[in-house]
Length: 161
Image (cartoon, rainbow, N blue to C red):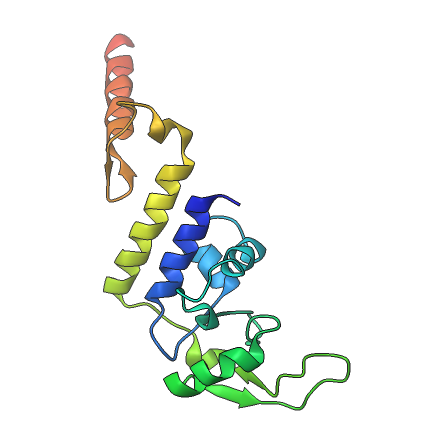
């Protein structure tokens, strides 16, 4: 797993407000890269410096094997929970997170921050972005490439009868 992807996942997790959550798939969608499993793999290596308990499975289940450790965080933050009966042969956790109430819906300002994280990741992932003079990035848009394409289009149109 690339370090820049994992770092972007951690940055998104750090933006999630207390008492709210996102699923692994939500983060993959926000970053427009990879999928839930890759986000889960990154989170499994995050350490205690990242609010790992705020990134959960789409079903509302806490991170695998960490339900007992996560519960005090959810309780302290007031995360909406649903109690459930233990499943035979399944999860022993007596709760899930109420995804309807607890899923984070970023404000416009928060979305701008998340878009910046996504755009930085995309720039790291674009091999052409590493070439000197290949593009200038302003708010994640490749302005120089767009200008060059527009100039080529105008020049081509001027040559055609």
